[in-house]
Image (cartoon, rainbow, N blue to C red; front, side, top):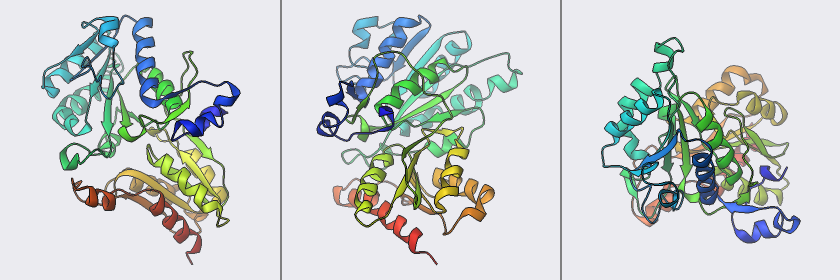
Length: 347
């Protein structure tokens, strides 16, 4: 199954799948290709967001789409997140299928009333008679000194809200398949991308296919420790696994892909095999996704644990701008390795 693999650079891909004639494109190319295919297939679909028709096209993910489909279907919008999110929700209620691109998750906060009190609630409040098929794309992750107001990972806020689905694809294959599933969903999906993975290459078939919302995947089989890694941390976990092999430590990497609904059984099945759990998240710890997954495990599989659950995540502080402080702030391979070793040597 080549789609279970991830490649951090072109050489890795060319030395493996490309030699077998399989097609590889970047994460950003997968998103652009998917949106183009969706716009061609369904006249109800349109894209809106600040900068979607700029030459850069949201880090390349919407580049050229306005020229291809026209500005009435790929439309730039004013800096008015709450109002325009409300317009997109209204369009969805009326039968359209908008893809709203919020370039930075930080500014989704300006639209929380529309997302939480309207998009997430209408299907329930109308007894299922009204659907809100909107996809909200939003981008998280470390930048170039983007600091406290332009690089926050706030995915756990949306996990808390009934009525929302939240996906965080880590690979180009999953980015395409989950975006198609999200657009075809009858109700709102928050689609979260990490800017660090945009250049990563993976196998992506040219055909239309779906990755089901709510189903995770085992990226790497192992027997000693389960590492549940989210978004960009999947890549850090894979690097950690490669290094730990030399120490005869074999970790299993689980990528949830969707964080709401969470594929709990996939995580619990892996834990029953290894007895040890490390969670690698791209957000903060307090009230975060890592804490939620740990709570699920303690409630449903406490007897399987041979050691306390370890959580690798961001510190509970605002994001610094200094490159030196950024290096200290963001965890990665080394922190995952240290947590794995603590789990193995716990008494």
